[in-house]
Structures are given as structure tokens and as C-alpha cells.
Image 1 (cartoon, rainbow, N blue to C red):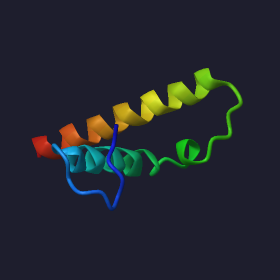
Image 2 (cartoon, rainbow, N blue to C red):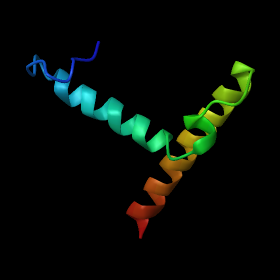
Image 3 (tube, rainbow, N blue to C red):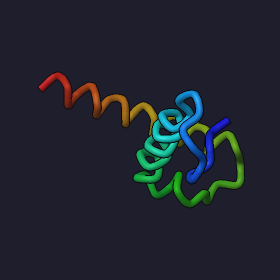
Length: 65
């Protein structure tokens, strides 16, 4: 459960909210995921998995250099 925006920070839920919002922001860089065109959920899930893989690969590549 994620706390609401104006709610006080109870037991670190604000940190969890930041992580979830940051993840959605990273995923919405890929237009095909931000606007869902596929009718089949398997294709959408595949694109989300691919986007997560690309995000992780870019992060790892950035830390190596």
C-alpha cells in the first residue's frame, strides 16, 4: 500500500511512494508502454519486460564507465 500525496510519512511509506513513482517515470520514457496500443496482455507484458531490461542495462553501463 502506498501512502497518499498529502498524508504524513508513516513508517517510511513516502520512500516507497518515491520508488514507485520513479519506476513509472522511467517506464513512461518508452511511448509504447505509456500509451497502450496492444490488445493482448502478453505483448504488453513483453514490452514492459523489455523496457525494464533496457533500463537496467543502461544503469549498469553508466556505472561501469
